[in-house]
Image 1: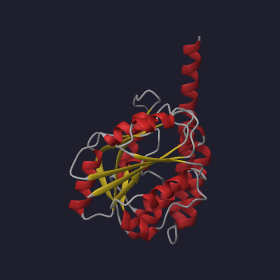
Image 2: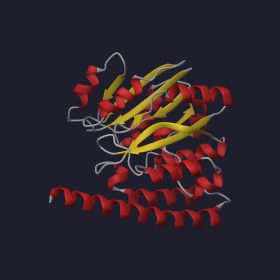
Image 3: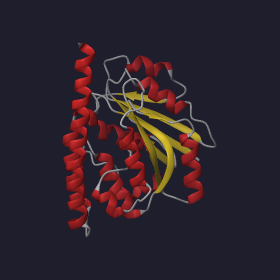
Length: 266
């Protein structure tokens, strides 16, 4: 089985080597195709990518943003199993082998697993959030997915056939494009949840979810409203309540982080 992993990239030289290492070090009964789609980085990204030539392919040219880069990667790869890993996130050891075995054994069209949250120095943070998402993931339903975005993008994998049936990422979306894709997948096939860590999502001040989590939360709600189709009232009310709770949690976390920074400066 051939697995295609796409990394959209732009000026993530501080993190991308850790992302690359987590991909190219994967081992198992599969063929790995790894493509980095860079948007014309001006930092050290390209020098890092050149060191890995032969273990990955890359293109570096101006694009229309992350969604455009990922769609370009879909078109440039050919694996039967597809995923994208952002240039500051990482895979857990053995993740791809676990995914391939699961999709093969379960005859599934897509799957997702647990995902840790790490900081800029690879330290695990916000463990309570990860535990909550694991609990919700084990109780997956389409209605619950409309009610909240709990599927971790770095730990999600899907068949090319499902992607072709659902269509590519909506290029108009720049924050919660993954959630929109999951809802389209969910109308076509039920995913398999893998109850083990497959990836790490990095939250830091420059990341989209770190810097723009309010805008992302509202984009998720608007996507849910557009995709609900017959599950509108209860599920959307649940999503709105969950949105408020999520924003409150992240505001508290930001305040805590600011206080810790101030204390360390003193």
